[in-house]
Image (cartoon, rainbow, N blue to C red; front, side, top):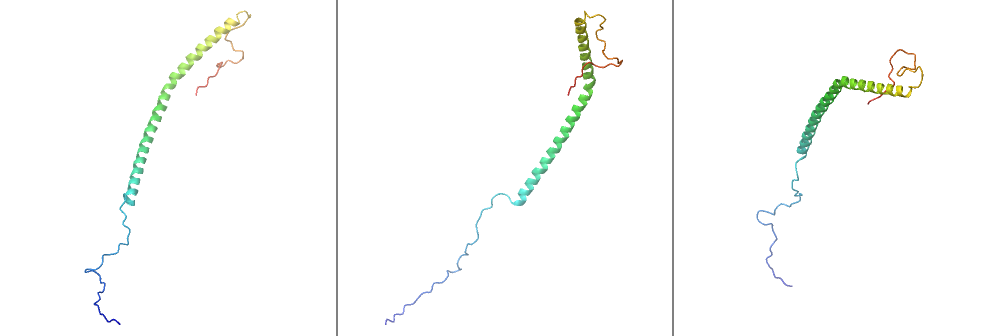
Length: 127
C-alpha cells in the first residue's frame, strides 16, 4: 500500500461569496403603462364627443337656416306657381278656342261642371 499523504485542497467559495443567481426575466419596459393608455383613450374619447357636440350644434343651425329660408321663399314660389298656372290656363283656353271655333254655342274656358267654385284644371305636386 502506498501511504502517500498529499495535502488536499477543498474547493471553497471565493471571498465575498458567489454572485446571485439570475433567475428573474430581464424584460425591457415596452411602451407606456396601462394607466397612461387608459388616460389617453379617455382624453381621445372626450375630445371626440366634444367635436361631435359642436358638429351637432352646427348641423342644427344649418337645418334651422334652411327651414327659415324655405319659409321665406314660400310666397315667392307660390306667386311663381300662380303665374305659371295662369299662363298655362290662358294657353289652354287659346288652344280650345282654336280647336272648337267651328262648333256652334261653344264657350271656350267654360267649365263642363255646374259648380260655381273655381277648380284648377290640373294639379301639380312638387316635392
